[in-house]
Image (cartoon, rainbow, N blue to C red; front, side, top):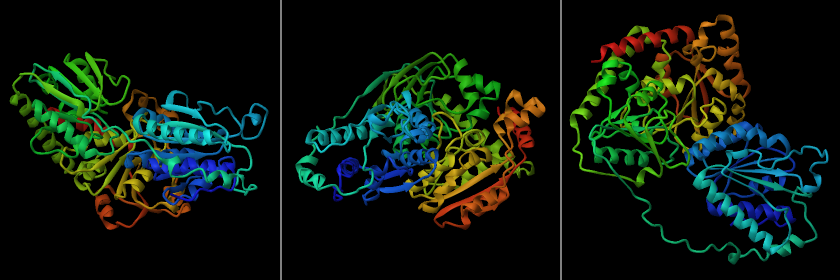
Length: 573
């Protein structure tokens, strides 16, 4: 136990608060500077068990915490001062809410007598994040009172447990002066003698039971498992649970590029990754129609797959560990809130090896067609080739973070199923581009694996303040920036035909030189061609952050992509 700071009531209060979180398992705290939060900041700074990371930009700080929580699998603490500071957390808190990521936000606040009276740096912070936190509580003002310190301990334990179980929580913490740990007349030190082993003792927890089992009866052998994105920290175990369902049913798995089921694929199950291309072939789409679909988590990124599922008239069971509806296709769907491990399939239906074989054969054909195309001269400068090449290179020694917009779609289209054991991360709860770099830095720091971020130029620039984290960064992150002078995803939308308005208001080329921007933060930057990216990745395994910039032509890339998918789909049979 870290010695408690008993200089005054605020310092003792915050020492107990942080010590309570440490005893629950806290490892990381991301702190943004400010005056009102000084008692919290000093408590974190003086607790060796917590790695405290300073981030000036609160939006960047929150996304960094998100990445740390994703890779670490347990709650991360966010601390900021009063006023508008906490408002900058909102985009990351929305993402954490949508994905169930455990983040504990503590916003420091002024005491009640300094609110609603034009006092500086004061806003209404009650329920600042609305419904996007799973729990909200405002702490009492610190007092040297035995009952209040017991309340502080229990409330803080509850915050940890709620975050760990369901997602982000918000604690508002008011403080009166003194905010610095200035000594009082000995009152806090005298009171601190009561905080002994008995104060910290926790009741024994009941032994864990085996948990819920859902025995689902099926009578058809023509079924599919559709594995969507997940935020599970133990990705190998999550994948194995999906494979066990495939072994029990004999059904193929259509695995999203962000599902571990695509990246740990064993030889005894059929894992399909190129379904987007397969289903563009109308004959195959018709012949492969299932009678039953088991969806795990949310639906994959592929619009082609979603539309096919909505039209195939199959019975759909969607299983997710998180509350709420996850059925974006609005099909004939029943939804169950349960962990995948709780699901068992019963019934007497024989396994349809012909159906499984048909999917396996379609996957082989699609892989062969894509392999031949990727080896052709016309793809030398093609953006999608980055995802294709990374899928061949990265393994269980790596982590990959994929930005929203075109990078995540390229990964979905061109990353094949394999037993590479790659850990994959993306912010697909709200599908935003904000906080991409800061999240990746958090993933790299917490995973302690060589990490790659595949991102577009707009997503990178949108979070360029994340570069300020580089000086204290202890992991290894290589950022591959696809600089196509704007938003490539918009080239695939109907608005792209509207000339000048499209280029200025939708594609929005930023015209920022990435090299000088990186240099201003002391970050290594290098321009590379697509064929040389993998060799450049191999060239250095040194800790730190580096940026590889790949320049592509947005318009020609979009035209090539559209034509290729149309022609490649026709080759399948």
